[in-house]
Image 1 (cartoon, rainbow, N blue to C red):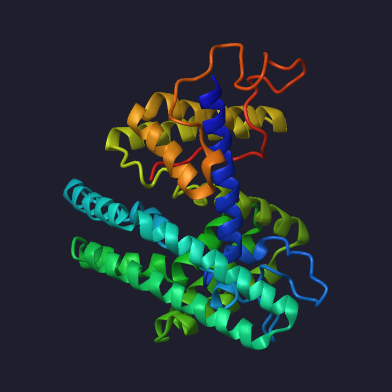
Image 2: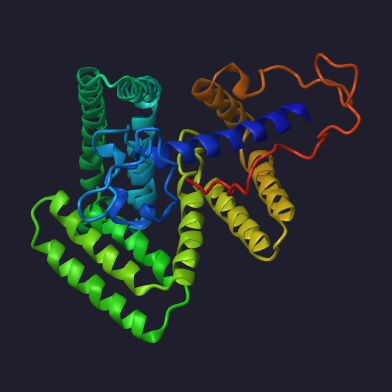
Length: 371
């Protein structure tokens, strides 16, 4: 049916937009996995637009430090919380805190996203025009918006920390800081084929980085320590291993960038388990085939199953509205009955040779994980 095809297409669009947004603005993650992504083509002035600058040591600094808007932090916080082994009482309390934060922040997030987009565009335009004064004003505006986001996140973290044990609070602080990003990088490195000598050297580098970071007082100093460790580990790898690592990082990114898609739908614990089960099944299907079309079909069917088997009618309607709020009136189907089978609105019938029911175009997008 057209509403389902349109919803799947809009969901795929959301994935692509989320990927682009996070690639542009995940603040501070230059000390982890993201520097493995291919560099963008320089513009006429020699700058890689949308990327950070290179520091004297050759390391990329993230554009979130003054050039681009940072990623909204709440999805990452929710992802990290799933790694804390919460008990049932803690899950109930934290779910309530997050639900209240979502309800209070929906409109603010929409307005903040638009403000960030406008400020980033103003900065790009000022650079193209060579207007340093306007560029500085845009940077200050971006910085103020980012600080507002970080303050919101800190308030949310304080509420959640009151529910956690001391050990869980310590783990949360690490996962949300430079150490957590370095852990994600190490996870990707350990997933590729390494020689025993490389494994020993990487363990030693990681241990020394952690020891050094514990003596630092600021996140910036800790991030510098982990960036150095990152560079040392990359120097140990062959070109073939670096290629394998890039593929592994891309797989991690596809999973991570979907965290916010269902964040506002308030899934029950049973629904989350169902989403995780479908996600695991689809990952097995994708891993078992080399055919891009077969992978796309498995991913589309996984998305379809989540929407039709897991979500309630109210949640499906909410998802459509959420996509229209984020991407405009054309991003989701209207809240009206579907056209009769075999007919499309505004047409006399299905076009011969058209896409039919094959679903939306798009690359191999991941099945959304449970929030």
